[in-house]
Image 1: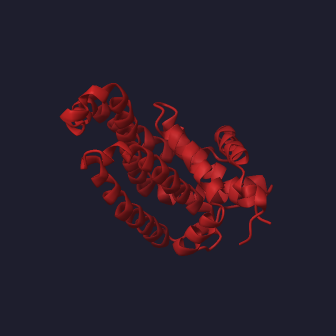
Image 2: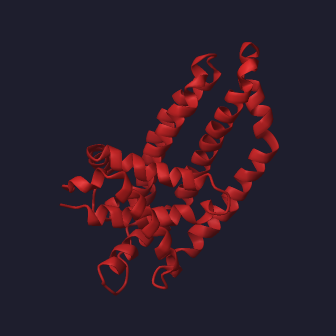
Length: 238
């Protein structure tokens, strides 16, 4: 699959995400949105509760005593980092549960933007879940070493920035996967393809990740990202 040069334009990727948000109200997609939104509502409510109860205490434990004089800078950095890491984890879990529905949503979105009608062709459930577990395994094996950076004094200062970059890449992989799988691309092929438009993929993933950290909005961000990624992958083909 070959992409047009515009695929790496961050402004265009923002536009695709906004298109995804707008299509959330499409009557044709409504039936494919109900269950994913309910899953997100339950999981993100749990995530917000945990953040409210424990994040302050957790951050205090990660700031070494010799850097307490910089706590006014470090506290916001660690808060943002833990917030991103926490919602990244909950997002991956939510996507695992909603994966069968997101594949259908991507297929229906493509049919809508192409003006086609009829039943959506479903991918076998075993294939969908196997692909999701491969993505989770890939992300987990890279997230764990990054988490270790938080407990290394001095180095943990750069951990929030590395987490933000990793989170953007992970979200790009997650949400572009559904339309790409419907096109028959394997996970290894998806990674190579997204690496070929790295700036565009990171921009789309970063926008999505930012949306996922916003309470209430994050309930609909994931399905909007699936819709936006489907439009993105379709429209930038050369």
